[in-house]
Image (spheres, rainbow, N blue to C red):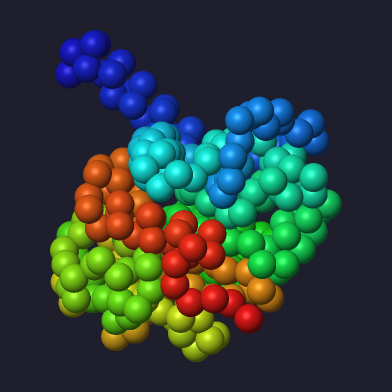
Length: 281
C-alpha cells in the first residue's frame, strides 16, 4: 500500500470515528443566548431545528433544510433554520406555528426550554421529527413517551443501507396521501423495541422485513433487529391540542430528492401547521 493511500484511509477512518464517537459519547452543549429572528418572519412560521449533541447527519441536514425551504417558498410559509436551543425560549416559540426537528440528536434543550416547548406544543402547535429525532440519543422522558412513543432499538449494519418495500396502510393523512400503496425505498432502517401502535399512536406506514435483512452482521456483532409483521416507520399522535408527526426515514441526502420524501415532508408540515388533515382535540 502506498503512503498516499494509507494516509487517505487514515483520514477517512478519523472522520468516521469522530461521528461514531459522538454517537456513543454525546455532548452536553446547551444554548442560553437566543438568536435574533428575521425581521421579515411571516405567518405561518416554521422553525427547522437541526442541533446535534450526538451523531450528526452531515449530508442529510442541508439536504432536508433545502427541501423544506423550497416547499415553504411554494406554500407561502416562513422558515427559520437554527441550531440554537435558546430558540425554545417562550417569547421566541410564540412566533412559530410548527417546529421541525430535522435529524436532531442528543439532549439539546435546558430544563426551562423543555418546559416551554412542552407547553407550546400542548397548547395546539405542531411538531415534525425526522429520522434521528427518534433515535436512542434522546434522554428526555416526556419527549420519548409523548412524541415518539417507543424506544429506539438499532439499525442494520452489514449492509447499513438497504432497499426495502414500504407498505402504506393509512392514506387519509396529508403525510401519506400522495403515496402509492407500496413502493421501494433505500434507507438505514430503524428498528424499535415495540410498535407505537400498541401505545395508541396512528401508524401511517410500515416496512416489510421480508424485503431486507433487519440485523447487525458487522465485525464481531451479530444481532437480530426484527420487529415482525408490524414494523412502523411513519406515525402520528396528538399531544394535548398539539400535533406530532414522526418519520424514521431520511438518513442519506439522496432520500430528500425522492418524490416520496418530498410528499411526506410537505404533508407532514401542512398537518403540523393545522392547514390540512385531522385536527387534534
